[in-house]
Image (cartoon, rainbow, N blue to C red; front, top):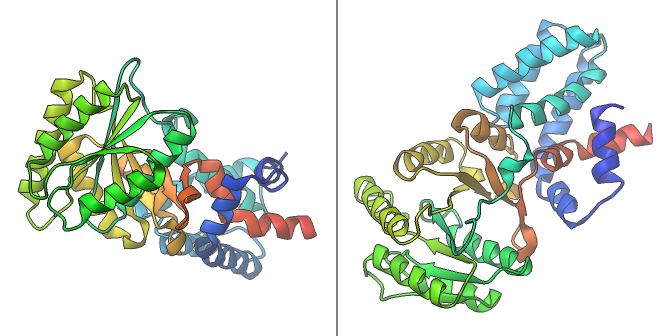
Length: 331
C-alpha cells in the first residue's frame, strides 16, 4: 500500500478534530505547495535532473531550509532509482513518505510527547521573544493539561512587559487555573520560586512558568533566564522537565535565529510553533527539526482554545497533501 493511501486511510477516512485542524490550519501552505507540485508534475513527463531542480525551488520557497532540501532531494533520487520510478506523478508518493522520514530521522513519535516528573511536581518553562504568542500558548497548554485531568498552576514570570501579568491572569480565569504573581518589575526568579512553593502546597501536577522576552538587551535576558532555571533546578531536582521555546511561524529566518539564541542559554527541549495557519511557508517545521535537532511539541493552527495541537509529523504531511489525496480519490 502506498504512503499517501495509508495517510488517507488513517486521516481522511477517519477525520477527527485534530486532523481537521491540521487540514484547515495548513490551508495556506497546502494551496501554495500542492499547486506547485501539481504544476511540476504536469510540466515534466519523466523524472530527470531538471525535475529535481524545480522541486528544490518549491521546497525552499516553502521554508523547508536549504540543507534539509538537499538531504531530501538526495533521498528522493535514491528512492526513485531504487523503485525504478519513471513517471513524475509517482514521485508525490515518495515526497510525502520522505518528509515524515526526515522529520523523525532515527527517533520515534515519542519525541513529540511532553516529559513529566516521575513523581511530584512537573515544571515547564516557556521562553521566547515578545509578540510570538507565548502567554496565549501557556493558557492553551494549561487548558489541554486540565482537560487531560492534571491540576495546573501558572507562574507570571514575565514581570517587565506591560500587561503581561494581567494577560496571564485573564487566561487563568478563562481556563480555571490558579496564577501566582507579584508586582510588575519584580524579580522573575522570585515569582517562579513562589510559584513552585504554591504548586507544591496545592499538590499540583504541573507548574507552567511564563518568562520575559525582551531581546533588546540580549545578555541581560539570557542571564535572567539562566537565573530562573537555576532556581527551578535548586527547588525541584531534575526540573525544568521541559523548556519550550515559542516561535512565530510567520517570521521565518527570524524564528530560526531566535531558536539558536535561546537554545544556547536555556537548553531548549522543544518548540511550540504558533501562527502556522497564517503562513504559506509551513516547511519551517521540517527545517527546525533538521537544523536545530529539536522536536516540535505543539503547533498553533488557529485562534480557538482547541487550536493548539500536539505535533504529529504524519498529520502534518496529511495537512500538506490533503488536496492531492482527494484528487487521487476522484480519479
